[in-house]
Length: 187
Image (cartoon, rainbow, N blue to C red; front, side, top):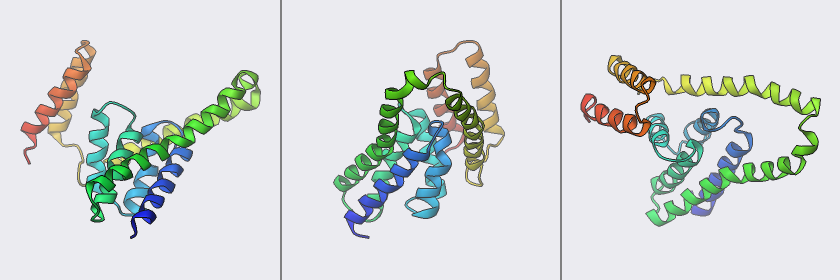
C-alpha cells in the first residue's frame, strides 16, 4: 500500500470513529476494533487488547491514546520508517478529534437556545441506552481467548477494589497492579 493511501485510510477510519463514537472512549472501542482489526487488519486482536490496556493507564482519553499508537503501528507495520509512523500517529489523533471539535462548536453555538427544547431532551435520553450498550459491548469484546480474566486477575481486582474503598491513591493502585501483573504473569 502506498504511504499516501495508508495515511488517507487512517484519516478516514479515525474520522468515522470520531464522528460516530458517542459516549467516550469505551463506547468507541467496538468502532475502533472494527476499523483497525477486522476491516483493515492493521493490528491483531491481541495487539488491540494490549493497546486498550496501555491506553487505560496512560493520561488522556482512551480514543486518543489508542489512535496515537495504532497510527504509528499501522505505518511502521507496513515497513515504513518510524518517522512516517509519527506522522501516522498525528493523523489518527487529529482525525479522531476533528469531528468532536466541529460538533461541539455547533452545539455550543446553539446550546443556550435549545437546552430546554423537548426534542433535544428526548434525543439525549434516547442516546443514553445506546451508549450503555456500546460500553457493555466493549467490555464483552475485551473478554476473548487472549485475555479472559483468571483467578489471579480477580484477586488483583478484589484487592484494588477494597483499597480504593479505603481511599488509597489511585495512581499508587495502578502502579502496584502493574507490578503485581509483572510477577503473576511473567513473559
